[in-house]
Length: 220
Image 1 (tube, helix red, strand yellow):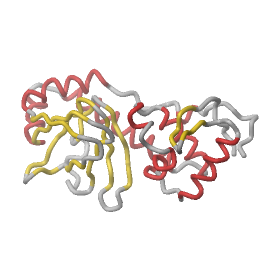
Image 2: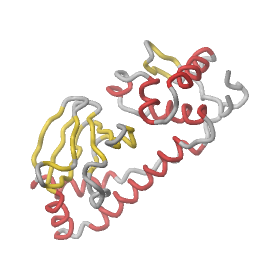
Image 3: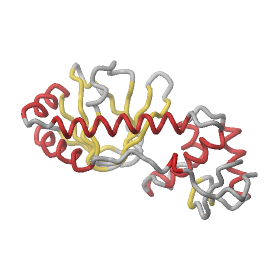
């Protein structure tokens, strides 16, 4: 069971990368008139290459997760607004794919066209802000999944889950959420979650995290 004397949440998981919404909106405002709008349902897979053209995607509504294609390991998730496809444009288009986590509204534009518009409108500052944010999110993710212990990883993932939209949080069990984003075994996840429930640190209903009524201890 967790030690009850350590109840202060570590700053390590509070220092999230600041999302540059204004700069993301600037990019979307300039790219959207040249894009194709489409709606998706939850769990729809979206590839970075459509036909023979590499794509840039504007997330206008909803939430999308980024997966490594070879093993379907979830690397990150973003809620609207966001722009996908700019930071990884020199990587293999098949290395990553996206999947919607809820009903979403997305616009697509060929990557070469997006790059042209960014250059034409001198949007380098906004692009740089988005790239810096993306790098920060990747660093944050690595920090979380390579924490010193399984407990540290699960603790951070529970707080991250509580920050998700209601749509995602109420349709994803805590165990599935954590397992999709970490290398932890399901048995170790279930054991720690059970201990946290017994200690009154988390509240779940049919496996879905509904509340963190008191701060989860730093030590297990």
